[in-house]
Image 1: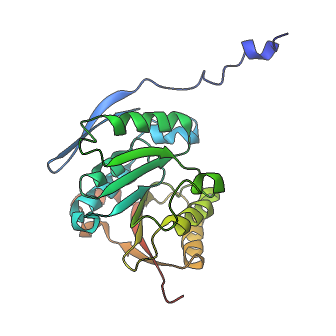
Image 2 (image 1 turned 120 degrees about the vertical axis):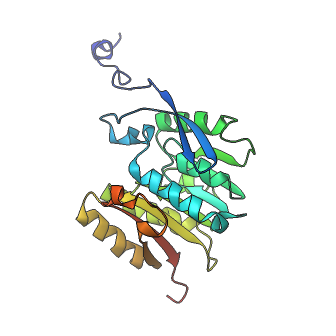
Length: 232
């Protein structure tokens, strides 16, 4: 006998898949994405939207193209894929990741669009931070650069994220984690900085005005570069 509740509640009822196309331009680089114009009420699905911190990351990528030349890049919490796809224009390869199946499907759509991935050097796959069965699918210390935009707003996700980076980021001196984010909770940011040091990272706060002219629009945002403290 069927459960009567199954006729009442459909978990897909609150999904918004009414994506629109939007083109983002960074200098001569155009990226066309499917996305939602605004966020859903489900925090796991915030990846369907492009947030301000992603624009900061993209501006940094454009101004630091040489850093990515030939690099093997991993993006955490890719969402729509904007930052990772832009990074693929300059790097050796980019692996874009997310954990939510709805967001991952959107990400795969944007990555497989030939307009975005003409060179075929970026791919999308599932990654659940801190979960061994997911981490085992990736090469330990296999990435020169790890990037993530607006992935530290939930304090509960910070330690699993750092564990994942610690496991996958190369041990080379020039390997780095680049984070852009909007400061929403000082406690979460403090926790991020404290735990990053405990994981053995050195932290550089990069002034936004050093790489973007419209920095005043993002006064409540930051960009950090974390590198391994090889002397620790």
